[in-house]
Length: 205
Figure 1 (cartoon, rainbow, N blue to C red):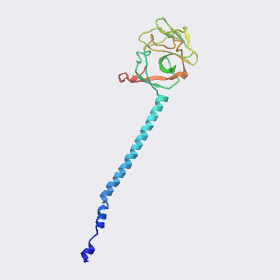
Figure 2 (figure 1 turned 90 degrees about the vertical axis):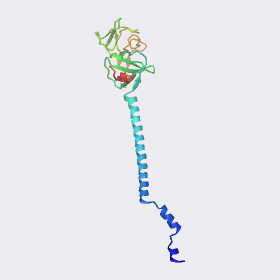
Figure 3 (figure 1 turned 90 degrees about the horizontal axis):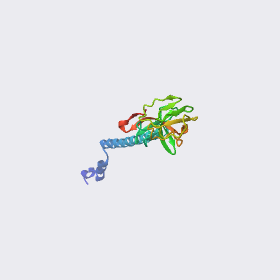
Figure 4 (figure 1 turned 45 degrees about the vertical axis):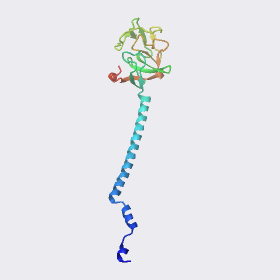
């Protein structure tokens, strides 16, 4: 065996060199692993943020700012059937406020007319008086006595609110003994904003 044969590299040695990764390949693989870790970390954070925001939104919607859909025509022209409105939780209401309240497993929307202890009187033409003073009602298009079977003048019981719909001819409200006055425990909140339809977007007055 001559010297050339002894110095000839083996096939295994050549394969090992070919299989050994280059510095460029190592850097590329390292960057790929870093990218995967960054991608999954970012994805995890996005999912966590979305879940958190959704949970907070649901809690706010349910506990603080319930969104309600209007059914019926008792509040026209202020609110129409199909409108979506936002209500705000609270316990202080004044004459003219629009409130939502529970009644027989439904939610009704009416306007505050008088508070506990105040006297309500309504003429045959539908003009409303509170404590012998006619109240200003720019939200009413057409006055009407409507469905009224209470004895007038009527004193609002303690811890209750007298409410009426803006569409006086069709609204069934505190003028009827079937609904009566609203107790504080029934109240969902004050209607403050209409969010749908978009052409009606704005504050509810």
